[in-house]
Image (cartoon, rainbow, N blue to C red):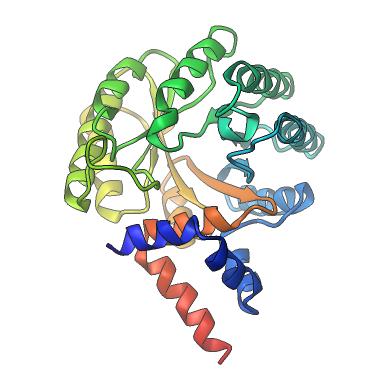
Length: 306
């Protein structure tokens, strides 16, 4: 119930106006979003890299409806990749791309061509791209575009969401040599026909998918903040004889930073998902929906101003 209410608020223009104009919002957003510009993304990236972490950068801008908006999103990523190269950060930072920001919902071929340009630019500067996964209606399209991109850019990363009933089968398809696969729980409101609804069922699916990826020949990217799932991932890695450099943990910027540093100090690769851009509202609401503690932080901040 909590999650569905927050995700409904993420789609409400009225709630967006209220949140966007609240005096405390800037401080709350700053915890989860690097800023609005490339310079902000670079500043946060360098700070995290200096702490021994790695980074995946996401320019916020999903569900574009015009071709010119998709071009702007592509060009932003091209500028970002060049800036990462100029700053000597490409060995530790990659980019995450939502195909909907590149026009996927109204022109899949255009989205593919834009994604291909981003992958080529990333390869030129010595880093990688991961294709973010969105709601279930885009899953087949995203995986098809991924398959095409991997023909020339085999290091392009995939994302699968444990709350979808199909994901175990997708993991089996993706757990191939050299395949980078990010496993997350999922952060969109989905119908029961395609997605598990209870936290317990999602967690069970996550562990089943984790077993498939850890036993496969790909490179698992374990995206979770859940202490129990982190411990299970460490156990599964040992069970399947994976060294710490044969998989990685991924966490969101602003969520459990002390745990990120702890895991990195223990010798694990920890990649922090850092978002930046002006279209932060939907992203922020999904972060709150994923973890009740994030809502508690938001409410504490609101109370502190009264």
